[in-house]
Every structure is written in structure tokens, then in C-alpha cells.
Length: 229
Length: 303
Image (cartoon, rainbow over all chains, first blue to last red; front, side, top):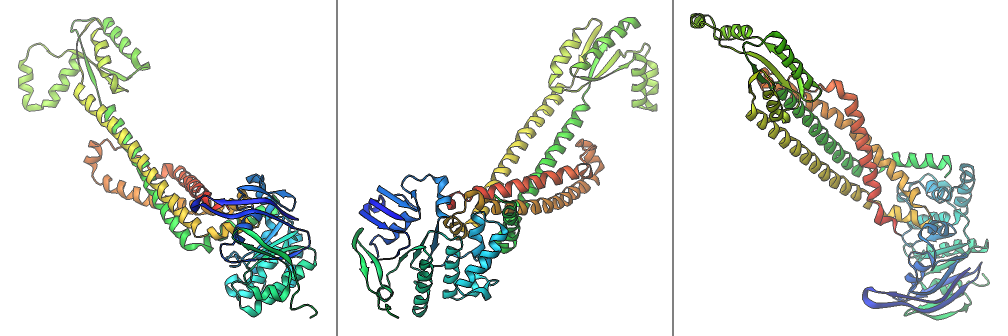
């Protein structure tokens, strides 16, 4: 579960209020789109959810961790409970596809045997079994993002946060990426996806949180164009 | 941490040397040159110390005693002089007036024999030749020897001693200063090279942090990588040190006179200390490489 209570974020540099008294609650198993224009506060919200920064005021709870009071030494433990997907994929360039996915399991100190079973499983989920030995530079944008999704899902986290995951790939592949995230969501994983691609949001529908100038401007469910398909 | 994961991180560290070969080569070169310069500076400092020590060993204080002293009195003076061996005297030799006279005759040669024969009584005094271990105490020694009953005079090379002490002190300070400056410069260069290497992989570190890797988990491969490069640089610098040092020594050894004048007759033989130098170079290389790399990661770990 993700919960923000009266959260303010104020940047001293420039005296900008990035978030103003934001209250949010995202329950386990939800799929949520977060939308908004540049400067609306989307990036700041993500930084709060990944504990890259702490709020100036209010409290942030993610997966049972109170991020407002989380000590530095506990951050790795918290981050292992979430999966991150980035717009620029952020794969480790000198590791193969298999090793990139296995890396997150090594970080969580999983046994060699578990890694040998889990990595092929998630690579199969994202349909990249045949690319296991390839390096990121040998893959297309869409394939790299699928590796990133496999990596995020490998440790079976309760929450996946995707920061504009379709921003660097062909529009037709964007739908495939969101479909993959939807499939993961059906397994019970909460997914928060930040995007500014309104067509995607309209197509898939569901819960939409729109930010505007640091405030929650809209938080409701809309029907998607793909319903009934 | 599981053993399998630790061995994976160690393997990653070694593999990273090849994956980041351009930066690895730059770090290797910087470390190798730094270690070479430091090793040569240390070796030559040791040799200069030996040279000054050898020259110091040639210092002698002449202690003249009364001519008509009985043998028991001379023996008594000898005992007193030898008693200082516990402090600063290294050797005491007695030269009777007859030995001294004969030595002078031989030194002047046959041509001057007539002149020596024309002198009636032997004018040379009985003499003790005292060598000091510590020439900084020459004044003190001369004063003490003068006060011994039966001693009529003392001749000591005060100026020579002062010059030697001054040279020794200057070289000591200069040696330490050069070495310290060299180490500081090397550390700065190594640190910056490591920083450049880490900066090139800041994204990789950031990814590791985002997936929940602890700082220790991230540092281990970098630590191993730095250590590995450092050890290779240590071995390479050892070879270069050996070649450079032996070349300089061989050039000097052709100048026998120069070697004797400079007191370099018992200079350090590289073969005698080759394993110590190798161990020191590898240890210093590993330490500088590993610590330099890990220290330069600090900022990038704050994600």
C-alpha cells in the first residue's frame, strides 16, 4: 500500500513548491496512471516513493515503510520491496540480459539455485528467452524495456513503479509494454505508472491521478477504450 | 552475504577490469609510474644514507699522550677510551711513537730518509686513533678525551663533522620532503583517475542503488577491481624499478673513484631486497588502487 498524508515538498533552490499538501492512497493490487504536465510534480512524487528524497512536510508510507523517517541504512531493504522501471531502461551495459535480471536477485541475496529457476521464468514472461545471452546494446528499445520489466518483476515485489516506461520506444510498442505491466498487475502486484501519453491512458483506462502545479487535480476511474476487447 | 554472491562480486571486479579497459589502463599507468617513482626515491634515499654513513665511519679523533708515560698508564688510557664504546666510540687503535715515526718515514718515501735520520730524538707522540659511531658527539668526545690524565692533546676534524652532519640533515629533510610530495602528488592523481573511472560508471552505481544494493555490495567489485589493477601495477613497477635502479648503479659502478669518494662502496644490491620491494610495491599498489577507487565513489552512492 502507498499512502501520502499532507505531503509538502519545497525546493530551497529557486523557492519552488513541488508538492502542496498532497493526500493519496493506493491500495494493494491497483494499477494507477499518474499524469500531468512538466513541472506538475510527477518526478518529485516518484522520488518520494523511491526514497530518493524526503518530504519537507507530511508522511509517506510505502509497503509498510515510513519513508519520512527511514534511516539511510534501511533504504536498500525498502528498495528491494519495490521494482523500478525507467524511461531510459537503465540496464547495466556490461551485463547480459540474463545477468541484468539475475543482478537484482543477487542483491537480495537469493541462492544460485533460485536465480537459475527464476530468471528464465521472468524472461519467458516478457518473451525474451532467446535474448538471454545478448547485451543491452544488442537489443531494440522495446526489448530493453522488457528486460527492465523482467528485472523489476524478478524479485516479485509488491509494488512496481514505472517512470514513463514508454517514453523511449516506438508508439506501437508502448501498448505492448503497458499490456505487460497489466499482466503483472493481474498477478497481484501494485503498479504505478507515470506517463504523459494521454492516448495510452484513454486506451487502457482505470484509476487516473492527475497532478497540476503540485496538487492532485483529478483522482478517479475512467473507462478505457479497450474495454470489452 | 552468501558465499556464492561474494565470489560473484569478486569475479565481477576482475571482469570489470577488462570491461572498462580504457580507464583500467589509465589507472594502471598512473599507479605504475607513481609506484616506480616512490620506490626509486626510497631506494636512493637508503643509498644516500648508506653513503653518508660510510663517510662518517672514516672520521677519526687523534688522542696524543705524554711520551714518558709508563705502559700501565697507557693501558689505563686505552681502557678509558674503550669504555666509551658503549656510547659513541666504534674503535680504538694505539699507535706507539715508534710506529708513528715509521709510518711518517714511509709516507714521505726514500728521498726524505736522510732528513728523518738527521733528526735525533723521535718527536712523534704516542697516539690513540679513535673512530666515532656518532659524529654528532665529536665535540663532547674531544672534550672528554682531553680531560683524561696523561693526554696532552686531541685533534678532531670538527669542520668535516659539521659538514657531514649538515649534509646528513639536509638529505634527511630533503628525502622526506621529496617522498612526501611525491606521495601526495601520486595520491591526488590516483584519486582523480579513480574518480574518472567511477564517474564513467555512475549510472551503473545508480542502478545498483535503485534495485536495493547496499553500499558494501556496490563497493566490493570496485574494491576488487582497484586492488587487481594495483597489484598488476605493483608487479610492473617492480620490473621497472629493478631495471632503472640497476642501470643507474651500473653507470656509477664504472666510476670506481667516484664510488669511493661518495662512500658508495656498500650500496644496496637490488637482488638482496627484490622480494621486499615486490611485496611493498604490490601491497602499496593494491592499497592505493582499492582505497582510491572506493573513496572516489562516495558522492555517487547517495542516490
